[in-house]
Amino acid sequence: MKITIDCELSPSLSVLPKHSALAQLLAKGRVTVVHRPLEALLCEAYGLLAAPDYPIAAIAAAADGLAFRDAYYLRADPVHLALQRDCFSLSQPCPLAVSETDASAMLISLNQHFNQDGLSFLRGNSGAWYLKSTQLPQIKTTLPSVVIGKNIHDFLPQGLAASSWLAVQNEVQMLLHEHPANGLREARGEFAVNSVWLSGGGVLPPTKSITPEASVLMADSIFYQGLAKWAQLSCLALPNTLEALLQQAPQSLRIQLAASNDLDERWFSGLLAALKNHKISQLSLNLGCYDQCIVVNIKPIDFYKFWRSARSVQDYLV
Image 1 (spheres, rainbow, N blue to C red):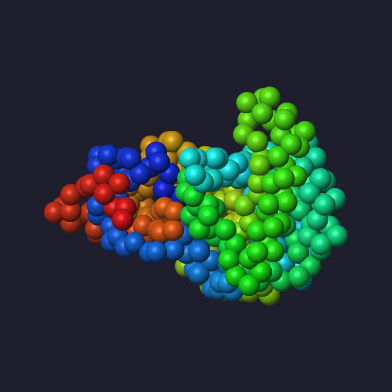
Image 2: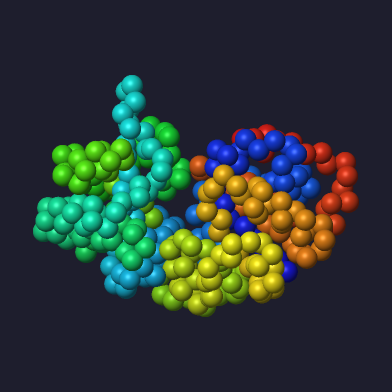
């Protein structure tokens, strides 16, 4: 069985010590650093091209109850921009969790303002927000995973129509600034939704039947579900335990692990043991960290390389 794991290298993972399961996997595997964000790496694995964005929003929307094949979609993640000394930064979590009631109120206000310009803000069945445009925006955007915690200035839309889209974002921020739904959120101790982050723009590509390394995807992410639908592959819910996965898994599998504080204990320790016991013939790890990925390939035979000593996970970041 071959397994590929996609996972964002969260702060809790990046500080794992050298005796952790993830650090031991890194020590025994063949490690390379790819200077692309995780979502870009995933798109390329399935033959998707950036033009100039990867069409992440359109692929997700097609699995999220928004099947407008010829429309141009952008992700419009509800976010909180935090004021720093001389700039704004993109705060975590991103996107913010927004109740259906609050989202509906905000999106109604946005659409009353922007529909006349051919722009529609939509909420998918998963709760994700999208922006549908009747025209092809001439912009290039940046995925939010690259921007988290940074000055947003250098990551705003770029291209021929950048000024127009910056104006759209400014108008969105003004509409949301004093929105009643945000007042309710702040009264509950929640972050205000004071902006949306646009990314992953494109039109849904023609359905494509491909033969990737993994024949089945396991993920809760709507993008992975959309990717499986587009590529005519199966997408299953992730089991609660690795043991359950090993019992039902096909010969090749790609898994998206959502960020949590127990990934090393819950998943990586089991994967380490399964490799040592030859229950897995090959394990590939794609660990996203802002605009780069740590890519690791490991086979059971690699555990005979006793001279490779473990280091802390943070030592692999460049």
